[in-house]
Image (cartoon, rainbow, N blue to C red; front, side, top):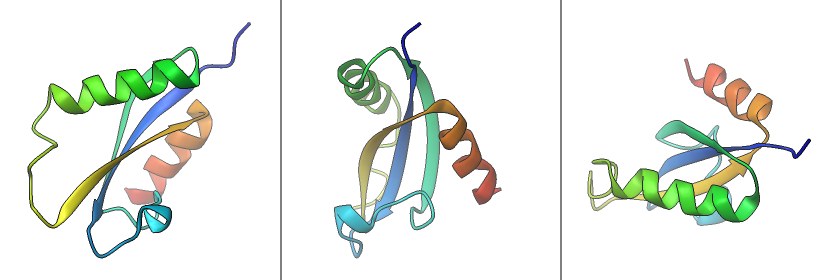
Length: 81
């Protein structure tokens, strides 16, 4: 059975470098759909961002798409609550 990946969308401040944009430093974390592989995770993440109002919220923010094992993504989301 293939390992599923979870799309995780991070909204980060432009004052953070992309390497420093993590679930614990992001302004917002959105857990998106699951994907069957890394390529589909990236494509689904881009599609998810494109059909929402995430992009363009503020000129001081940027979006980073990350693919994580589902359990890690859910744990990161719980830390923010």
